Length: 467
Image 1 (cartoon, rainbow, N blue to C red):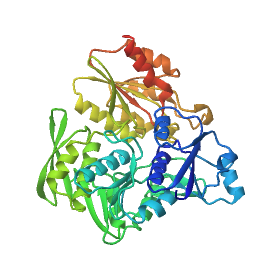
Image 2: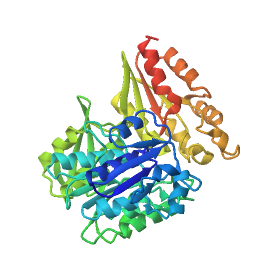
Image 3: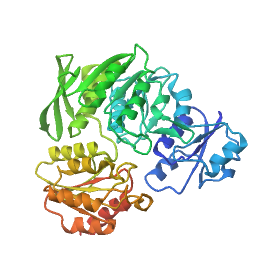
Image 4: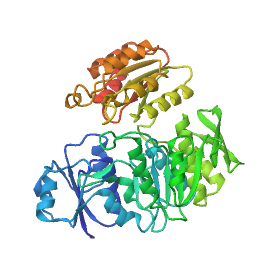
């Protein structure tokens, strides 16, 4: 057995993936966390390693050689204090990944405000289909594969989701600054994470610092259709732009939908490259597809293999995932929580189901959307829906009144602009209302980066009872 490693906070999506890579690398793994619930509990159980329930100093009595302290932990946590007091070797997950996973491989780092998880999963899938045998680290649950992480061989591409959020309580740098990119994809650059960044300029500086780590022979692959394109001027490496804009090196044109698949014509450096059948809707997902095509091409993959890889991609859980159907009413789960992602997801649903009524249920949950910071952008983002239901603000009692998002006021303004909207404090009552007022053709689009008060199980239960 190799060295011993303990994951404090093993229930986090990234920590589970990291623990799996440690197991593949030959480490003896244990972990700890608070009480876990599905689906995370199942992901942790599948690791097949000892996991302690709750944080306690004695959880570290097995004397691990390394303690990975999760991003959610801070001073005062029993295991943080024990690691510090005992002089144990500790680090963040990104720091461990850098030295033990990424350095001997060819990192392909997928960054950006939106689309990281989908693009990471898609790039990994396409590269695998093209025979490049990549390793990967995906910040979600990709459909059609057993696990969200795989080590891959030394020297092979390693596709990793590069988050701009801070690394740990003792390391406030963006996570992606640890990831040694050989190819860096930047899907978008917008203001988010208002708890750690003051403005867009501060976020862009973090991305610029990441670009300084790409070797000259490496690549920046940036979206031409948004602020990410500005990063080209700061790159020391080769650059390529993708998107729908005329200045895109890899440029796509949507031709329409056939059999539920988006048909996209692709030009590379002004020349016709080929046509793709994309099993995802929305301009943002077509942009993600162009990024994957560009990366695969840079790594030497052939057109036909890339085309088939794209066509067979099954997606990622909680990204436009249909989780329930009742006649022609379709219930969809989506992770969107930033105004831009909300707007594009609604547009994608409208494209895919043009004859349906789009009913959006939104849980304000992220550190920025629970505040007034996004009030005006949310007005524009929701305008594409037929009806909007604003759920309770997650931990709203912890936010100062003058800083908290006014959901009732937002709903009133939406109504004034012609979009039916209402604010709800009771999730069960909201679920009852949506079911009781369902139409013949409804798209019930749930948007949350959390549990939304258990509303998913509520809908399943009501549909099963035939309500």
